[in-house]
Length: 166
Image (cartoon, rainbow, N blue to C red; front, top):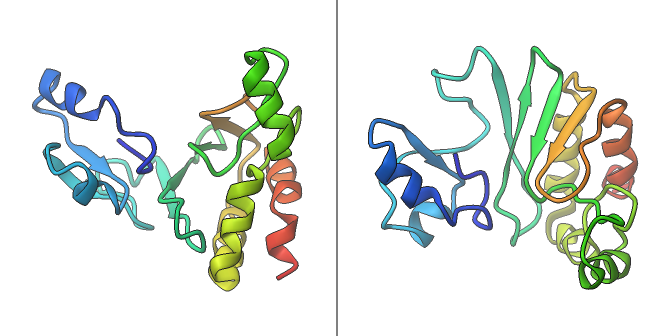
């Protein structure tokens, strides 16, 4: 699974090592990576193989961010790549400074540049955030930052309050 056009680097290696695996990617990836044997393109509808366990949502409203987020229903865990990030003291100094400038140092949310890009289509951004907030989740796993062990829904709602005001 490659959930965004920014998270795909080792998908081809994986597909070569596990040729029986079904490789799915975000909407922009087949054009960006025609070398990968894609089985499917991710959208708002989970594939039959994981539909009993996962829900998913294509992030809309940001012309740069091509991401699909997931909800593992049983554990009430949302899984994101870049939709929500958090820089912290464990990061290298330059990354901590970048996180501070981006407004995500020791707090979860979209970096400033991504937040600004969500203004491209405010209505679509709001619908995406409302859809995600309709899920029942308490934990959040993210690619960049600390796991949110509890109260993740409120953390996400605070991070995206700007979109709910649109």
